[in-house]
Every structure is written in C-alpha cells, then in structure tokens.
Length: 463
Image 1 (cartoon, rainbow, N blue to C red):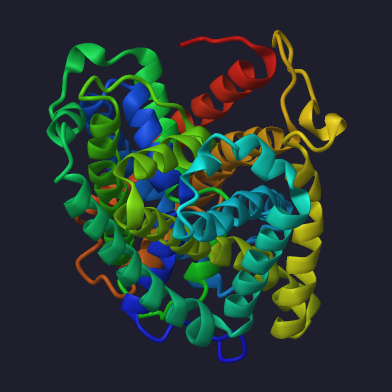
Image 2 (cartoon, rainbow, N blue to C red):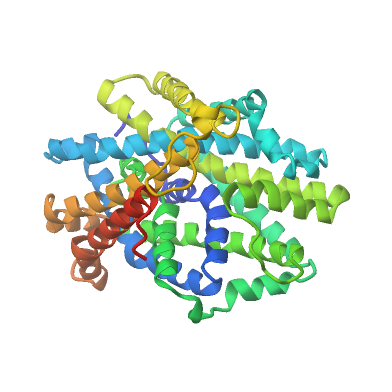
C-alpha cells in the first residue's frame, strides 16, 4: 500500500470515483436517451436501475480491490483464482479501447472551447469538415491525452485525488450556472415539463432496456476501474456508504445535466421538444446552434463555459481510464509509475488513430465494418464503442458479481464489507446485496450482454 500510494481521505476517494463515472455520457448520452425514451418516465426507470442493479456491482468491485490492494488482474491472482484474471484482463482491454476513442471526442470538445470563445457558431454546420482536419483535432487530442497522463503521473493522492477535488466542484458550479441561465430562456419550461413530469404510457420494453444499459454504462462498471480505485482505499473506510455517495453523485450530475439540456432544447424547438440528434450531433451541432441563437458575447460566454465543463467531465473519466492499465503495468511489471504512465498513454493515443481518421478522412476506417443485417457500414470509432462499451462492460460486470458470489463466496465479500461498516452484517443491505450479486445482477447483465450482441452485431432485435 505504501509503495502504491492511496487516497488520503474518504472524500477524496468518493470524488475520484464519482469523477470516473461522470463523463461525456452524462452530458450527452443521458439527455439523448431521456429524449428517445419519452422523457421523465425513462428517468424514473433509470434511477431504479442505478440503485437496485448498479450499486451492488459497484460495492463488489470496490471490495475486491480493497481486499487485495491490487490492480484488476492482480486482484484475482491475489485471491487465489488465477484463471479468473481473464476478467481483469478483459476489463483493462475495455478501458484501453474506450480511452482510445474517448480521447478523440474529448479532443473535439477541447477545440470547440476556442471556437466558441471566438464566436464561431458556424462551426456547427462545418462539423464534418472540422473532424476531417485530423492534424488540428489530433493536436487537440494529443494535448488532452498529455493532460490526462500528467495528472495520473502525479500519483493517487497527489494527482488523481487532487485533480478530482478541483474538477468535481468546478464542474458542478459550471453546470448549475448553465442550468440557471437556461431556465431564463423562452420555452424553457416546456423542456422542464418533458423532463420532469412522467408519462408512463411511454414505457416500452425497449425504453426499459435502454434505461438499464444507460444506468450500467454511466457508472464505469465492468472494466476494473473501481477494483483499481478500491485498491487505494483504507481498510477502515465504509464501502457501503462510499458506493452510495458515488452513485448519488453520478446520478445527480446526470439529472442536473438534463436540467441544463432540456430547457435549451425547449428554447430551440419553440417548446415542441422534437428530436434534435444524438451523441456528437447533439453536442457539436445542435448546442452550438443554440448558443448562436443567443448570439453575441453572451452566446460566446455560454458556449465556452459549456465546452469547458464538457472537457472537465471528460478529464475526470480519462484519468480513471488511464489509471486502470497503468496500475496493472506498475503492479505486475514493476515499472516506475511515471514511466508506465507515459508509455501506456502513448500506446493508447496510437491505438486511437484509426478512430481519429475514421470520420471521413480515411475511407477504410470510415466504412470499417458492415454488421450482419445492416444496410450501411459502421466507422471504426463506433465499432470500438460497440465492442468495448456496449458489449465487454456488461459481460465484465456479470462475471465480476458471479465470481464474488459463487467462486470467492458471499461470506468472504461480507467479511470485507463489514470492515468500516460494523452494522452491515445482519442488515437489510447485506441481505439485498447477497441476493443482487447472486441472482439479480448476473442474470440481468447476462441478458443485457446477449441482447446487445444480437441487436448490434446481428440485427436481431428481441425487444
């Protein structure tokens, strides 16, 4: 523990872990899914899944990390189940692949800070040309990766924790500032009504499935990030309450992001709340158009603030994504942290080059693969997202909770969780967690994995 470093406080751990969960998906993924899912009804289902499904997985990952004081691979070795370290290796691979394309998108957002500051709202109509300028956006991505590497190279308490304590409060202040402003716009309350007043007639099997997926993906589960962060947690810290605070922080920021986005959409659509695009389309096209509608210096200030906050959110996630493979290299290969950080960061940046050029610059990577039953090709960046984020993460989460309940055994998990939580044993929380990790979580995540593979790669939609 002394050689690896650790978090200096429970608050530092909660902020760092919450920062790991908070990212681009909270700012654009969640609002889009809410819009597609009929509004507030989706939000209700999402919240339920965060606490009944994702919370048990989070507790399990943190407990495994703290018990072993090891990285995502070394944890399984230390517990005496070396054959199961394939789950940790899969998690590290997922994190590497996700960071390789996530950094490309973060680089786009970083460049937009300067575009908004200059009042270049027309960049929204030129987004296709912007991302094809690979040397410019590649330089932004390189700068973002270097910033991430610098933070991680400073160590757990001196880098990751210190950055989280600065970034997370600043992120919240900026989001709240934009929420207050967006509520002053015309038709903003039409957006609020859509977002906050549930119409349960909108609920379908597909909406429930998407809410479950969004809940799991938004909390950085299944890739070993929380096993790694858990390995830096003190033995007397209360994992039960820490995981609850982390879940609340991530959910809270996603909900506040919705309070920022939907009034803006209400303003742009004159209260009709018609679909305005997803993912990059929402962030890099629709919102700059809204900022342009505001116009002038105020529009530039609002737009610049938004993309600064987006980069802060991205940075809290890229730091944790990089720490996962770095911890593995440091622990298992005995390489000095600073050297491991820059080596791993360089390799991941190179791995991300196909995602960088696969948005129109390179024909091969732009039309990289055609899925079974699909009528058009999928670009490399989207393929990496489907493979790592949508597929490997739920599989990893399923295997981690199955391992904890049926291989490592529940009584060992309970013993670890009781450290720092003297009232845990015999409590309702213990009974629920035992049920959730034994039956609920592995079943639901297994089904999510199978349905996602069938739907994404084979065009078979069961729901």
